[in-house]
Image (cartoon, rainbow, N blue to C red; front, side, top):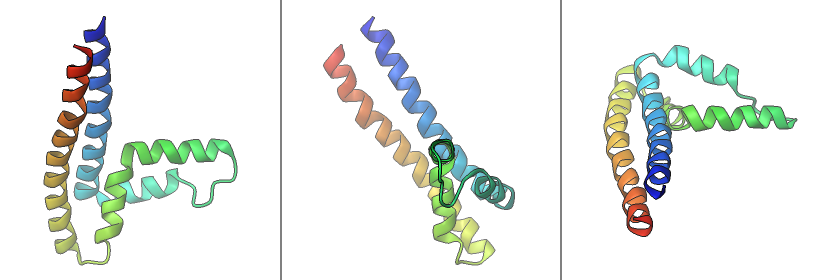
Length: 111
């Protein structure tokens, strides 16, 4: 029973970290379409709870990619792509480190 719960928690963590890495990759490859999609899917000043929930979902799926895009948007196209590529690699390494930081103590506690 405990192994099943730990595997479920691991899968949730992997899915979340993988979607964040995928968003960085999408902003790297097809930034113009994804930026428009993100801006059309979020509200600048949400007024009701439904708009706030939609913003939370969009940030959960594409938050790090859009954040990095905004950080590098002041540079020219080539430099921005280079920085996004470096960020994609570092983001992948960071996701792996975060995954092990969370799951190793989880396994020690429950197994």
